[in-house]
Length: 482
Image 1 (cartoon, rainbow, N blue to C red):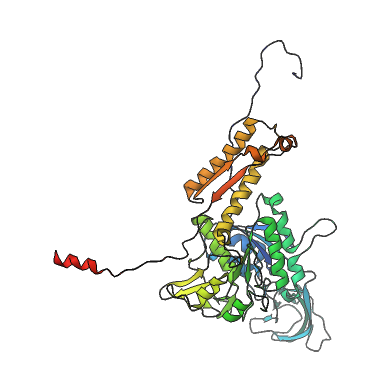
Image 2 (cartoon, rainbow, N blue to C red):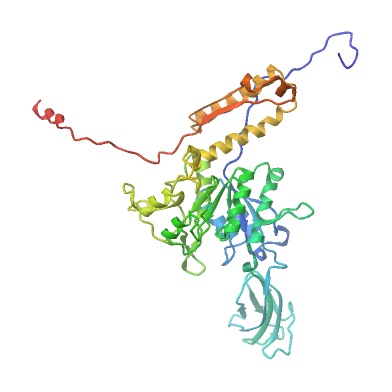
């Protein structure tokens, strides 16, 4: 009955009909590693805190410049090399207060420009003494310190003589202090998450989660790789896992089995196994250096999401910003005996470099292949299913706890079908439908407040193999006689 008495007329608004469903973000990369935090202003420094990075300017502001031993700046550079649009959720695990190594009495001499460079950058707690160790100079009066770059400049009016030799005590931010446990992270007694575990909090913080997870330089450790897959399962993400530096083609393939010695022994559908490392040119040292394939591949996938759509395979896409490969991989498009084909055959994503092709990503399948031969072992098929499921789940909040009636059932079904029609038009699905089956919704289930819908769909599989059946037909010679 009405909540209060009314002698008159009233209008009650009844909400019914389908609701638009918004797809979740896909070009989101979760990156866990180390950054030279003394490059960063104090107000912008973070430890085990997710930070959103959308462009190279953000990358430099929050995580500094590319320095030897630190993984985050190089990974962000690799990602943004592939194109605009990716969103990176970055977690730095190194602490400038505790992850340091001490240096005692390092002997240095001021150069003609009154500057000396320590053996390490990212320094703190600097103490400068004369070469005998008997006099301690005063910072600000006798010298200044560039902590980020590990440089000490003599003040001309101070007590240090021009060209003097000195002994320096200091601490430096040492990335080798970071262990697998630091990258894996934990949940403390107050509920604070660190390392990879901090990625689980990001929906509540930002309204989206990482759909690709990378830990360059650390995922070669099996303990880290295994935990990446645990987090990936929770987030419906893909974990990009590198083979260790120095791995051969034979070792990469053997690593897929229980007799292997590397971190590739998994059939998890969320694992993308990456081999080999790639080479980039380092302008700071004027040399070629190795870097993990995973960070470049994550950038390729994110850029493809933005430019084409998440239903496109990341394979057969030229990688930007690299000059070579750690291990040459034989590759021919029409030869099944090449190393590229042998690696793909066991579920490893590798590189293709043939005449005039450039260095390209090569491989459509996750580590689920060849154990699992269903279409979901295709990376793009699995990702499309993830996006569809997650988009539908989040959109159902507006329908939860409403009275169960035919109008609610119709609204849910038509909302889902409308979204799937949109995906079909975009090319993300070949076909799909949502059906309410009365046989699966008994009176007791409805009485318990439980609705069940059937969801059927099929994403497009990648054209991994193209075959021409060729015939020499002598009947065609008749054309010469006409």
